[in-house]
Length: 310
Ligand SMILES: Nc1ncnc2c1ncn2[C@@H]1O[C@H](COP(=O)(O)OP(=O)(O)OP(=O)(O)O)[C@@H](O)[C@H]1O
Image 1: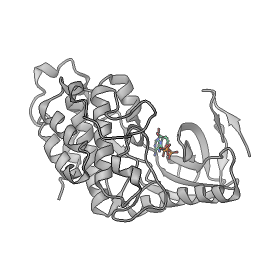
Image 2: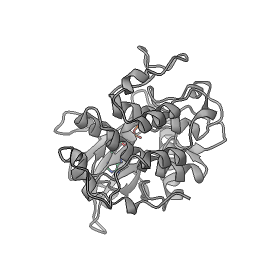
Image 3: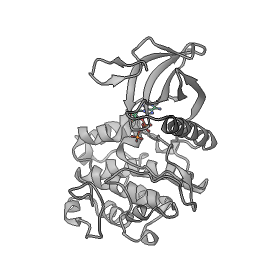
């Protein structure tokens, strides 16, 4: 298999200039995860700059696992296409095979993932965290309303543009809600306790994971992660870490992290509670925010762009 090396030292499939399927010219690597490598590409037909996610080679790969990973990429493309039209979910555009690897092409989101965003802000203020969660839960509400559970909500699976607009990516683990998935999914630190029993996938799984994401933004820590990386047993939420957090944001975060899935709010409820925390964009930014980078962001962010929930 073709292997090449980028300037950052990581081994990746392609270097800039490589042309995929005689159509997509690689410009740079955007990121990689367990499922695939993502490149910024130039579409030689349309001239558009897009993102291309391609199945990653793996150690100890067999014909069987090779086929399965290819199916994952196809599943992500198909699901993304069926969720098309949801603002805040990345739109897949094309699907194909190159050098025996399955890939799909999608819109390229300008910005960086929330992991990087949190790394820069350390930790994120209540208002900025609420602004991110309002958008994420607006998208999640629509994904849930269409009958799907994302199953891998985490900082790295949400991109934020320089204007503060949040986009949800990596639909590869999503399954219809109410079904028992064939494969477990999720990321340690964000997994709901009931995920360990591999039962029916419910939308409340995503709420718990989004609660972990919010807790991480606010505190830089995972709420329940133990030393081995597993959520092993019920234990109290370390609420003392949230003392400096806005009381509404704190209450919502605690509710999202309820151990019993039935006690967690829906995505629409989270969104509606947190939107009250945000300054009214039609009024001037309060002077106390003048040195907060959120002001710069806020002035450019049009909340009106986000359709109200039904
Ligand atoms: N449409 C896009 N536009 C810009 N960057 C993207 C896009 N899609 C993915 N990326 C970048 O590539 C990284 C990896 O993408 P993604 O999470 O889809 O891969 P993955 O292999 O499925 O990851 P995981 O380990 O979560 O399974 C993202 O964190 C993001 O930085």
